[in-house]
Each structure stands twice: as structure tokens, then as C-alpha cells.
Image 1 (spheres, rainbow, N blue to C red):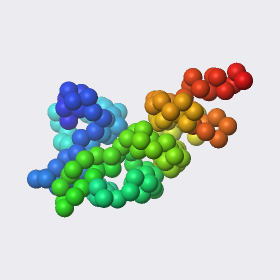
Image 2: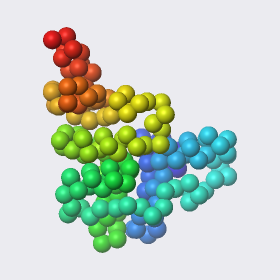
Image 3: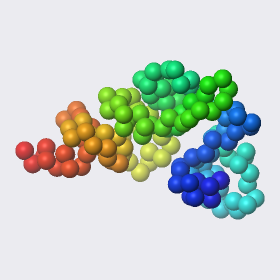
Length: 159
């Protein structure tokens, strides 16, 4: 799985049985369940570490509904399924890139991720679209009630 993720430059893989999604494995799963436990990857199966019982959404559903579902269930990747078959994966980055107003919904999800020990809720980096300049940034910060990129924040602080 790690080899495929590296080769394809993706952070997760959907595990399918025929066309139906059966599970999800992420870089984080590999780090937390294999690397951090000093296990040999060749001795661990994907089925042992993948997330099972996937939460999915149909392609006809609205984007704000998907964002709420992701936030409510603390997930960053949402498989899109039609008639039992996987047709795509919606990520929190996708949602924020096309709909900045939904960033607030996903911020709540980001605040409850497992690895929050390195950051306080106010410091946690968040990718998305800057509400000032409209460009996508890997790290948004809240400034005066808006989520802004580093450059816009510096400009606002300089005023």
C-alpha cells in the first residue's frame, strides 16, 4: 500500500471487493499502526490496518451535506458511491478549494483529529482558500474572523 501511495503520489487508497469499497488505508494508518509500533510492513496485511465500515455519500448529494458529514464523523476523505460502486473520493481539501464558505464546517473536523497534541486549536494549520485573495494555501490562519493565507495575514497586520 505504501509503495502504491508513493508511486501514485496519493495519501490514501480505497480497498475494494469487486467494485464495492470495503475499507480505506491512509498514510496516517501506516504510520500509527505499523511504523510507530516498529512492525515489518511485509508482515502486516492491509485488512489489519485499514478503516472498515466506511462512511460514504452519493454523488447527487449537496456539497454542504458532504462537509457536514465529514465534520460530524471527523473524516477527511469521503468515498462517493453510486449503486454500490465507488465513483470517487471527496476530500476536505477538495471541499475547501471549491467552497470557501464551507471551511468553517471542516475547521470543526480538523480540531478533533487525533494528532492535535502538537497544536492548540487556534494554532492548528488548515489548508483551504484564503477569504481575502481567493488563492489556495496549505495553511490558513484565522484573522479577524476570516481564514486567510500567510501573505494576507501579514498585510492585514501591517495595516
